[in-house]
Length: 85
Image 1 (cartoon, helix red, strand yellow):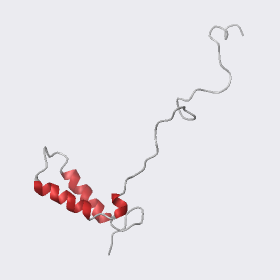
Image 2 (spheres, rainbow, N blue to C red):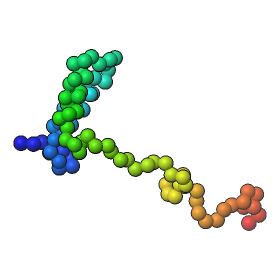
Image 3 (cartoon, one colour):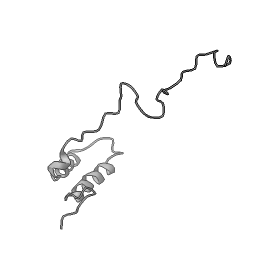
């Protein structure tokens, strides 16, 4: 039976196999030919949707329209004038 992932698509076991293998290699100073072939084999076993490029939303905004460091709207205080009021 195919293993369904969190998105409900079959092939989650193949994603986990590749991820687990890559995690095991994270401390390796280099890859030998057998390791390269295994990575290619695991990548080739993935479904086309899992190989597709992920489009992330851009994080940079030219002007901050909301959030913690947004400039406040409303009355602006002129330095030195607040003590006159």
